[in-house]
Length: 609
Image (cartoon, one colour):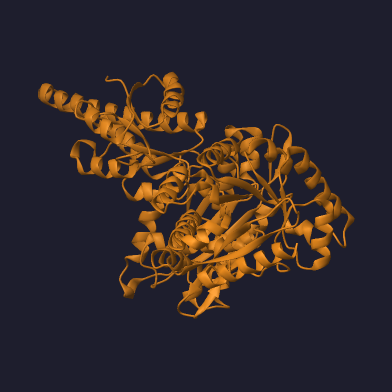
């Protein structure tokens, strides 16, 4: 029998080495390609039994390569597993023809389980083909022995049917939880919404997220995590009964389709499910774990036109529930009861995309004022606003940033801001000469973009902006999980000539450790402490400790939220070099007139000093 062949396509050699090492114990023949183009060349000579395909590659991306392969009848049925670090790639991967996915950073047990699953499927197919061939040969050779041959054939046909049933089961079920998989769920939902109006039966879709799955998975290992998924699936199936179609979507997420139009009945079932999970305790190695769930409920009625629509609606409900603390049952009606559907998150994504495409965003600015005689010059922070054409008003960041982060558009907004600030400086050479520095905020998502430095370099070059005119502010947050990668990107920006500031410093759990990791030039003290120094000794101590560390590191501090003269005086006496807040300057749109007026005010202050 031919050896099981795996083709690894990834432009990162380290990823290839990791995958090859994980696969080696499985007795597979491994080929590698470092790009989509190279993979196409290899596939002219090789027909692999499984393809592990990276999503983000220069040139032909993983999605594009998958589309090309699905058009070639040689690879129409070849299993393709996408390797990705972005959860939003998962649905797109399935839509272009992917069979499965592996998340980054690569987990050896997960990769091994996925590959072993497809190898088992491959071996069953090989056995089935071999058996079919044998059956045909035996029929021809044993025509004269009909009685004996028929008996044997019946046994072998039963065996073949078992294999076919097993293959069908593997194709439709999740091998960990033994529930249906995403493909089977999609088919089931499509069958429901495809019914003619006269026979349409409404159903309810329940999205179920386990609250503590990651705690179990990471503290006790993958085997414990798999066992928790198995027990959770059994609990769901037991409570909801045989009428429920139960599937595992991904990770710790399950989905249930329950055929009924009785809201009271589904409410009772959802509450029962929630309460049972609240009482449920997972035990592993004499350790107990409280699990709990968050449940989103969406009705599948005649207005639903696609499976993706159901997923998106359920995702919106789930996101709303988790923003409110999670571990609850939330219904789609909860989202639309107090507002029109046009204001739902589903349209926020379109509004933000239109905002970037049609320049609905606006650049505002706030002056950063010198508190020390040692500091001088004109420093500004660029702030983003969103103009709402339908309302004729400006929206503040706290209105739309959650949606930008939710739909992973925040990096596009950051890039828009970088380009617009550079364009403003280029269009106004007289102001360009007098402005010393403009600060721009970079989100954690932007800092994970490996092409960010190239983009900044191209924009500054195009608009002839000295990199020393730009300061990038990094919010000190636990969302920055790839500290080494972030530090590397910031170091490249610094080498380009830009300066770096740590924003909202002191608000996170590892503030001072960031001082070692990041190549920063300024520290912006979190306004939560700055505004409370007059009333809170602990806030005063926190600000003083930050200033003491900054002085030892010879890095200037910026106090945020300076709202009155008393605060400005106090910070000046503490030796803090810069202040920012309504006392000095209220944010206004970055226009030539507004910046000139601000420059004039700064010059008057210098003359007075």
